[in-house]
Length: 78
Image (tube, rainbow, N blue to C red; front, side, top):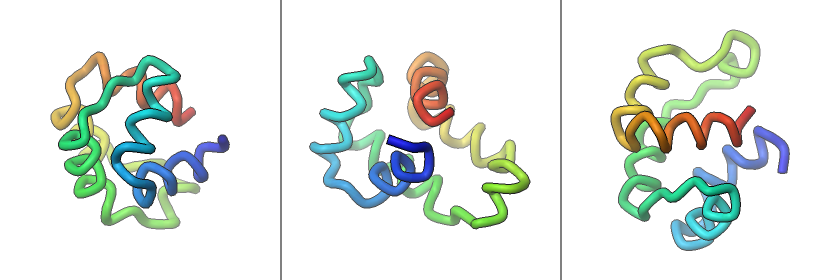
């Protein structure tokens, strides 16, 4: 799954499906963490594809899931 497809799936897939998919890659997010991440990423902007995701958004995502899960998730999104 490409980065933009994974992001879209994270945002729109059922929390159960997203959780099961990420577990295959040892990213163990709870349904509540997925919900909170969706809130953090809700303001996604197409310019992020060119300029990168703002540091404040990335920091918010890390605060939601913790450093270890954040690193694993970001590794999957790269």
